[in-house]
Image (cartoon, rainbow, N blue to C red):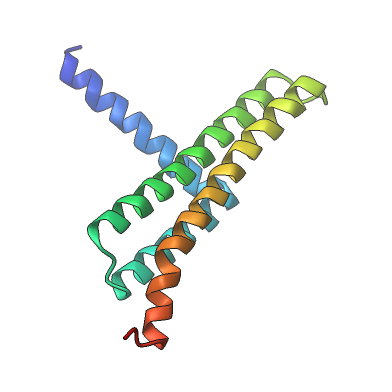
Length: 125
């Protein structure tokens, strides 16, 4: 199999993983809805290019974190369905990492969106 065929297959597997994530993981589905809302709000508020860059990085980071968390959880479940303190710690740490990125994304989103929303109601002299 040639180089390009291998790359094509690799992208196919990646897209299957993305589909699996959004089809079966409720947090990823919530993240998807939030992503659509943020994009619509950004379009309505006419965000600047640098603001879009920050928003896109935050969206990508949250979705990537969600995917990594799901992969870790599934791998842990495959290794052992029994309760074990190390498996619990691995799952908790992965979930905590996603939460940390979500908090950062909320802060970034607030710094970007709040001034735009305020300017809709307050005329700056």
